[in-house]
Length: 210
Picture (cartoon, rainbow, N blue to C red):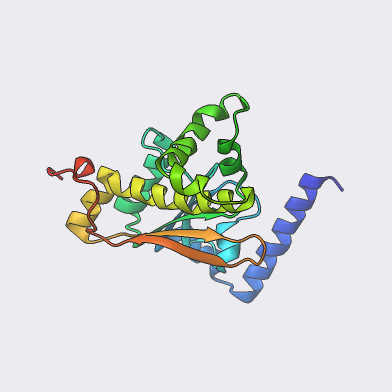
């Protein structure tokens, strides 16, 4: 059996099990999508949002990219964000990184990796902002893991800088922003940062005509 054929076989078994446990499961999903959460996570295959949170299809709206970035020129991310906030009206947005992230590790290096250089530069900026703290850490592993936490924090801040979030905060008092880090070693998620609706950021990023 070829690898992709195994995926199709597993899909049939999963669908059969779901239908047997809950005959109306798929019928409900067809007619409504009302997740409470938007998950912005890393593309790493070891960090699947639904599985590590024990949630079912329909409960989390998911966007994933290398190193769980919120980049102000990324129209894909911004489109997902706008739909989640304005149409789905999510109450929580989670930026979830993971310790040992390959994207964060690569951002420490100087080797040219082609098109990904442009993406990693955003992570290099995080290092530049926090260089003094990171350089004072003794081991490479601890440097990377602290950078993972700081990167999550900066991406949550980047969410708060968007007009999409600021408009929702002003008019709907939502969503609550969360920064989490997943540990591959034990499967546990660690909250590292959060912002509630209306929290202030540097005034230079605040919009006054929303």
